[in-house]
Amino acid sequence: MALRDSEPRYVISIAARIVGIETHTLRYYERLGLVQPYRSGGNIRYYSEEDIERLRYIKTLTEDLGLNLAGVEVVTRMAQRMAEMQRQIAEMDSEIERLKGIESGKRQKIHERSK
Image (cartoon, rainbow, N blue to C red; front, side, top):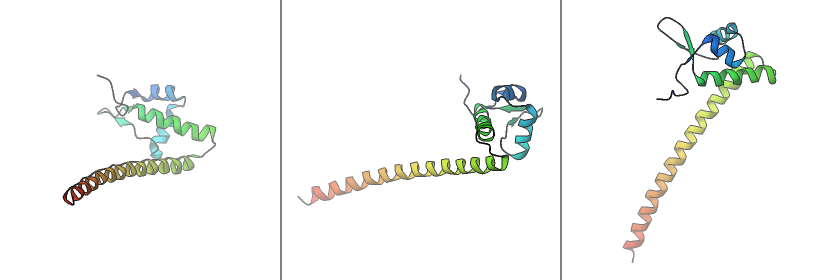
């Protein structure tokens, strides 16, 4: 059975190596709330693929674009909000299509009765 991207799988040293940053940087990002790895019963941090992608995104924002961590927090919050809004738009689009189907059916019944 394949792991989902949200499932914890990497300890901090492996996650740091994958992303190319230091373990103390990962701990700092966690203290700032930029990433929240899963904690085992023994308090060991485990990072998921989603966490790794988020860390890569943070690294890009800081190293390539020159943002400080306050800027990273603003950008990631905005990106999360945009994703939520896109999800809501998709739900509304589905509801619109459902209502159009109902409307079409009612119009068809009206048309059939008016003959």
